[in-house]
Length: 301
Ligand code: HMG
Ligand code: MG
Image 1 (tube, helix red, strand yellow):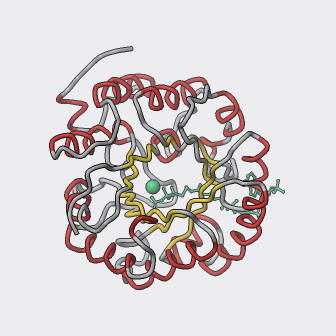
Image 2 (cartoon, helix red, strand yellow):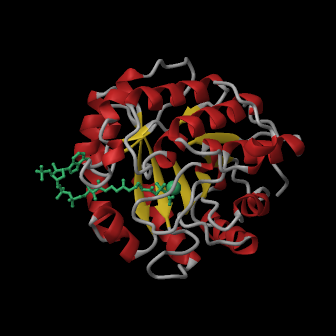
Image 3 (cartoon, rainbow, N blue to C red):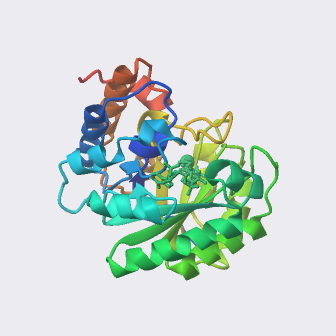
């Protein structure tokens, strides 16, 4: 299979990127970030997460954020929902696309959602049924697709089984998460190829964290698997509260630099993303973590 001519980026910075930030971030800042990213040309901006605020306090303002954004026509604003309660809150706030998250590791599933893999599917069944009744699209995640912070290696076969089950339940796309950024290129490619035997690659996405600086290499290795959707976070923000040591997602601007250089179209304005990376880093009192943002420093406020 050859490399794609176009790639769809799913910007997860406002959710995956901010969920692990220790200090409270005003809802207005989160809203401004979502709007900047959509204005930069990102067609999908994962906006927030309707999880329990006791588990993830930073996402406690999900309703305020989702109802507060100015929606750009044609842009999708999915939100995370772990259970029926989360879906109901999300629908109430106007969500028309949600994402459920499962794991390929039992221990991570327990730590992240207080449920076994099997129990998490039991939670998803009524959620997906209600979503379908309301015309809400459901995406699925598989965490620990290249390894688990508690169990270590995770067999690609298990990732494929969880992904296939999510697809059969009605998820339109399954995003394969290297939650702790432990994979390397050939492993990543092997895992994706194994999953693609069970779920067609046009229904898969790559969600790689960059903890060990491997994410771009891993994405490059997967570019000829037929998968054309990549999750990224502006400024390389992020981490999962229940994945100790996990760093941010691969930075949107780093992926853009690579894809732009390869002539692969995304429709996204890299300079605008770099500006957003500097702006949000300033709001958080940090420096942008990505190499491209550091190199292409545009200090626009
Ligand atoms: P639980 O404690 O087992 O839930 O948590 P419960 O059903 O027993 O309910 C306990 C309390 O929480 C009740 O309140 C519920 O009403 C409330 P009380 O009666 O005690 O006052 N509750 C809720 N409140 C608001 N929204 C809800 C909700 N559900 C229950 N949706 C639960 C189970 C799943 C809720 C919890 O474990 C949780 O919220 N986990 C989320 C953890 C999380 O957000 N992790 C990060 C996202 S996943 C990720 O980052 C990985 C990803 O990026 C991919 C990758 O990188 O691999 C996606
Ligand atoms: Mg993630």
